[in-house]
Length: 245
Image (cartoon, rainbow, N blue to C red):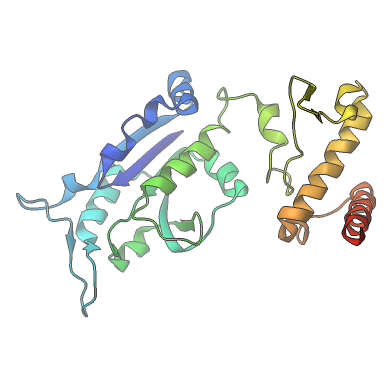
């Protein structure tokens, strides 16, 4: 796939190509990454990219002609254009999966106080990476690219992405590695048992427990199976028992 980033600070992406997963995707041909400097589309010798807002107010606004020219130059019939904005819908793993299936994705990074709202008519989708304020869309763009790249063929093993947090609607179960014991802290015995069914059940139950404790909102929209409903009831009973001690 091809990902194009429209930014006024391309230098922020220097070194990003060398990030292990990005580098691997570039080398195996599953990714083409293009960083485009919107300043090149500004008119005049001073490359005037921003101006004060009509109606007054603090800060500077990215000019519509600059963004429109840049977008028109990189856009194709297959492009899906995304703008990072507070008004966008929250970015999720489902979005990452959807974007990973695109042939041509364009990420538009705003900056300064904001952007001329006329560009919204040229954008396919707005997304937000969180309820907080950043200086621009460059860091969100890197976040989105990373979340996409790891899903592309040949970047990492497919099985490694299938049981991660948010992939199936729940948080991932806790994981451990050698040594089995360290300073009085032991790996759960079931993981050392070699009993694959017991390990599966433990992981599912721990996944439900973590989700209940840290992201109960996810359970509100998760379709529990009969087995999971039973496990969740056990988890609630165990946690309630701890609270009473």
